[in-house]
Image (cartoon, rainbow, N blue to C red; front, side):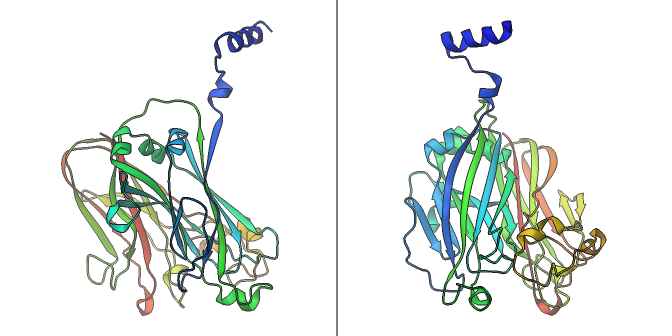
Length: 362
């Protein structure tokens, strides 16, 4: 009782904050149900919300305002919400952070860095059935540190890019109310952050890849092998460096990479630092989201071992962001390499979108 009285007197006299108040969250709505249209079609001229720019039917950007940036701490979550319209197949979606020359308009020549920070796969979703929306939540504390870097904020404007490539062809025939329509999904993005103040460290991003295609027949650094490497030079040391990697295997042809799990090997400065094989987990918890009949889920539930035999990802789930500690990096030349040694890409189809970047303290 005495403790409660002290807190009340503090609040009345000095405006003191309790620990509960310090940890309250703030939410910034960046995109609010923007509409994605047929990715293969001519760019539509439908109106968009104020400050939103449509790059094409499958891509939108919006600048983060000073109010947005000031509401962000080093405890940051990204929430993506999709609303079903007229695409009932599984599609890839992406969120990127774009570094644009300070005070310049959003045109390609002014975009210095475009870095994917999140990736997801849509469910097979019939807009007339419930649920008709899906949420994807990511912890992106590292991005919060970048957005609070005072030097970066003096040099760049930050724009969020929201991409989702879909087509209504199947839904126009299979989903009631979709005949003749070209809208495929509605999409929203929210940044959710702790309001608790913190002492910001000067974080730097080293861009390596962002959705760059990787295969063994066209997009490779070693002919006939599934290998990509990126050599870069640090002009200053980087402390507590971490490597962020996003990959997903695609190729829906018979025997395609989408249905075969492959070991991925990550190298840094010539040394193997990690091996991982995507997927291998049950997709049953996402069955409820897949309201359109499809060949992946079927009519009967599958055992975990059945899913583990072949699935690289689940329709309706996010793609993992894999994080590896690199320690302190010295000034000078370094190399990142990704190798998927057993990938085949039957009939020269399919690809692996590769995203990789390093972040650390200067």
